[in-house]
Structures are given as structure tokens and as C-alpha cells.
Image: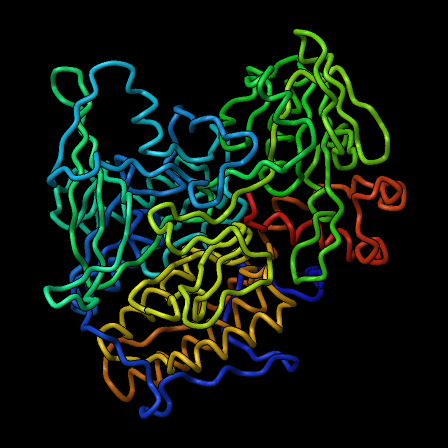
Length: 580
């Protein structure tokens, strides 16, 4: 199913709840107290992995509910994906790493040592530090694709005179300000925060009787010493529950294209993932092939356009029947002089020392040569290396493991599974994930998720039984046509539906058990979205003739059948997608 503005209010602009006639309201969990999930141990102390907007919001709601919470952040400051640095991530491996280590390879202390254990790096430790902190996939001139009145925490608004178009610098400072407001910034020396600390492993904690009673985290903290060395300390801490707030942009995906690994061995510096892009100047007067045309592919193409000699944009056919923003709609963001080409079939074996002589064969038989660099704007996969036991890449996309075995959360990295409401791990809801969906605004959506697990863990709201959560999950899988890349996609309609669900569940529980209630999003956000589109994108012409592009196999028929007005609306709708 494809979305346009005529059929879909933008996910970023969900306003007051209204029930569409085609949608059925959720049942409210915990309506029958006799069939609630029973936790094996009480929750009082919670670990939060990540200090982006989701982690900060989780901390606020957990502590508001009377729980203790501790944030572990691998970087040196809060802000998550919006903390920019000139330092780039480590090169993305070609082919892509196994999904269990797609983000990073856990650094473990030597077997058998007593913890805490310390090592000191004296020379050549830059890559150790870089891999530990994981620089984010931002470039210097990046601006958000949502306006300020939408991309803000509801009770922590921007100044009224702020420009609606937000740079990543502004967003980074905004989140650090929010962290300071909560007393969680890196210079606040709050004992509830551990910066420069990466979670290497999360395992069930067994008490003295051998019974499960929480989670044990293996942690690695890096400290720059005064005498020029880097000190690493491994230690453990035990918590009753864990919130994973690491975001979705950590494990780079590079598609398995025939011949690509062989070319990468000879020309590793000519092939990069979009997460390593920072400035256009190094690409001046070069011919660039960008693979992918989602948000990062389109915006990097625009950024490079004044500098590059020529830009090719390779686009894979959009054939999915799942609900999503069509890739065709993103073409409206590409500069008019961009040359769109179809999917890459293979890289031919290199025959010399000049990368520009490498031949790249497309699926329609065209051979590209004269390319100076290739940028893979092919997105990211879900990966949580600190939870290897919940990764299973051996099963197929829609395969399952037998009942009674450990149910995976990650399989091929395109989606996450085994979660109730995309939050609670069904077999043990003391493990939660926050803001793992796409097609929604995390600055506002995270509040509902945070209130949900805060109330559940303090017995101010209840989950249905494990059996019922699995039934609901399996029903959702069936409704979405199986697992896959778009399984976590919400869009405006589903975001609106979910917010109604959280309001009904949590506010009904508040009336019965006490605790805070949640509100709908402010009215007027839909109007703001329309103003934003007209102001920022109103002067864009519909640059591409879909009928001419269709023989290349990059355009879906459904979009081509729409009217010109509807197609233009689809372009505007797609700029708010958050597949980077």
C-alpha cells in the first residue's frame, strides 16, 4: 500500500486522535485483572542504554514514576543521533558484517579475569576510541526534514522565534539543553549517568538460588588519561529491567552485489557508506554513483550537486506490497541534472589500478565506467551486539523457532520481532525497546512508550498475559503480510492509531490505579505541516516523467497511475520519511 497526502496525514504531524472508519480500535490490556502478565521479580532499578531523545525521555518518565534509572552512553555527551562530530565512523565492512555484530564487535575482557579489569592503550588507539563511541551518520550541512514546532518535546518547546528549519547543530544543542534540564548532561556529574561507557553484554542475572532475578550488564568505560593514554575498565552492574534506546542508525547495510567485495579489496577508499559522508568539497569535479534514493541518498545528492562533475543515482525497483512511502516519491528531492539509473547487477573484476576504469553493470545491461566514487546510501539494519542471544540470522525472513526455545528479536536485521507493541519483549517484558519504529516523530512518540513501561513496571498499568501478547503479535504479523523491512513502519495512520491506544490503555489505568495520564498531540500540527510543505517545497517542480523512467524499472506502477497533483503530493509526503 502506497501513501500520499491525499490519503495520509504525515506521520510527523499527527494531531488530535480521530478514528478512521477502516480501522478497528485496540482492546485495552489489563481490562480483566485476572489475566494480566505476572512479573517474576519487582522492578525498581532500570538500565537505559543510550542518551538520545529516547533515552532521556525514558529516564524522565521512569524517575517521575518513582523508579531508579541509570543511563549508559557510549559517546561523551547526550544527543544520540543528533550529536555531530567531524570524526567519521569506522569504514562499513564489505560485505556487511553478520547482523549480531552489525553495529560493533563487543570488546570483552580476557576470560577468567576478576572484574573490574583495566587495560591501558598507549599508541594507535584512535580506532579503539572511534569504534567505542560510534560517530553518528550526520553531515555538516544536514538539516532536519521536519519543522521545529513538530520536532520538539511537548513540554520542552523551542523558543517561539526559532527558524522552523533546524540544523543538526541546533537539534544537538536542544537535546543537550533538555539533558541539562534533567540534570543529565555530561558536565552535571550525575551519578545516574555513565558517559563514554559502552554496554558490551546483557545477560539474565541469577540470584544465589539460581533463579532469574534481573539483568547483568557488562560495561566498558574509556577514559583519556592526563598522560596521553587511553584507559579501559570493564565492570558489571545488575538491574531489574533494561530499556534499549540505541536508535536505528548504527549497523550500516551494504547490499550483497556480485563482484563488490573483490572491488572493495582493491579500492577500499573509493567505496563508502553514507554514514561516513561529512562534506561535499572532497568530491569536487568527480563523477559520483550514489546507490539508493531514500532520505540520505536524496539529500546527499543535493549537497554534492554544486561540486560534483556528474551524479548517477542507482535506484532499486519498489515492489513491496507493504504499507510504506514509495521510493518514487523521493525522486522529487533529486536535482534535475541527476542521472537516474536502475539497480546494479554486478561489479566486473578490476583490471587496473584506476578505479574509474572499473565497469559497473546495471540490471538493464548498461555498463557504467568513469566513476570516481560510490556512496552506498542503502540504510541501516537493526543490531544489538550486547544481546547476541536474541539474534538468529540462521532462520528465514518469516520462519520461526519452536515454542519453548529462545525467541529471537533480530533475524536478518530488516525488522525486530517478538515484541509487544514494538516495546516489550514478550517472553520477558523487563526488556524493552523504545523508538524502534519508522515513519513517526520520535521526539513526541517516545513519551507514550516511556509512560507505558514506567506504569507497567510500577503496577499502575498492566500487560495482558504472555499468551495473549503472542496472539496479538501473530495477528499483527499476519495483518502486515509477514515480517520485513516495513514491519516497523507506522506512518501517520498507524501512529495516530497507536497514540489512541496508549491514551485509552494508560488513562483508563490511571483512573483505576493512579499515576499520570497522557494527552494527545497538540492541535494544529497538521496545519503546521501543510505550511511547512508549501514554504519549503512549494517551488519544487515535479522534475521526473514517470512514464519515461518506468522502462528503467525504478518506478512503481501505482504511483505512475496517480494524477500529477497526487504525485506531487506524494513527493512532499516522502520528504518526511526517516529511512536514512
